[in-house]
Length: 629
Image (cartoon, rainbow, N blue to C red; front, side):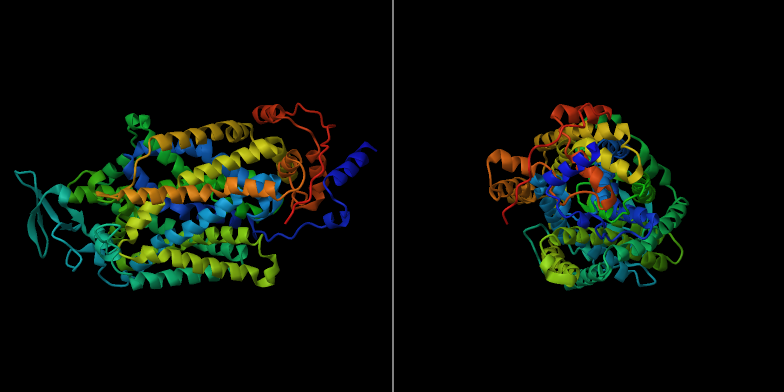
């Protein structure tokens, strides 16, 4: 009898009148298998950053100390939010627009994520374009980056086959087939880096020297957008099968490169640079700030992609296991790539005769320069180069496909009237928009723009989004409701350590990170080039514009509701009527739990202990108000 009364009260207070609508689960496109889910999550995370950003930040922050800071911030901040995004996505089965129904007031977070991904796709395609250009020029029996005999080379060029000998004045005597000269060690530049700088980039003198539009890069931009449209024709079904093939291919090629590089001198020094921490550097705030940014880049929480992929999981998928395997897989990818690159950089440092940190003049090029050198060590290097750059390009495109799907998932919430072709139309619209955004990056000043945008766009704004999400999920919706939903799906609650980290440790660390990063802010540089002052203003405006929708949507939602301010507030701070589990068999339990009154102290106690201290008999008295369109 009591159960029937509770059921009726739940239906009345949540506006559920047609029970027949709850007899069937909402249709959600799901992954074909758990393996597809895990591989797609790993491919998404690895494609976001592990190929070039991780080695770059290790190089920039002095080696092993960065890995230590990265590991700590990854566990304390990245993993808890990663897990929360998977849970919310899997439980609700909703896209980026409607998933915020668990706390409608903060739906602006979804707008921020969509805007962030749109801008990110617009500029990060530049890295894929460079990979395509590498791939094109690899179709030759003599790789063009292995010698100094080309028009783009300078007198500072050094090849891997150079004969180095010290002279009495501290300079290096360099003899090759065509040149013989005296060079100061700090002026020497590897043939691989000169190829990247002067051929692939055709770099101008600065961001104000735009130069000309490089039409070969524009052509590659068109190719990339076409691939993304094709990959998203059937949404998640296509993505999962594509990633099963593409995610692991670079690992096999990387293993061959690592084994071959171990036959040269200098490998030990490169690996020691990577794994030996300088504990004095841990006292520097910069290393913690950049390690935290990398934790979000590496795993992908705060970007929306993890949440969107979680929404395509089956309701009873073992998400704890999925998260654990995916996180371990991504960390392995990051470390694996770094080991290969720093083994090669150690060989390069030994050949040129300079400290490892001076091998590459611009840290952004560490990944491409290191891998192109490693490929030259292999037999029939042109074959390995074609296969390698193709496979890395595909993995990078995996991440871009997911980012595009994230924006599509959000925009679908506005475009239901477009009919059954809405998915294809939105994909084509987004690809066209991001292609136009990408055009300035195809000029000679494009690399400067790339570095500037990459410095400001995916850093502070991502941390603000991550902080807002953590508070919304663990405190406003409540860790108790998160646990209840998790029990519906897999029959157990969140691990205690993970709950405490998500509710207490992560928010505090993220807030501290924001404050310290603002205080310790330093403008970006491109090698020795310093950006004009006005570009930093543009960078800050770009970063802040990403998070503006959060307060803006709050204001719009409050204004668009009728009733007193408290009535509007109560409506917008409780789950919307149609939000809930994607499996309707669990909707009754969800509605019953929704009526329980809890205070802030109750939520705080549960988040800390995992135990409820409030009465399950308390029922909410507030009726949801109708929103005004």
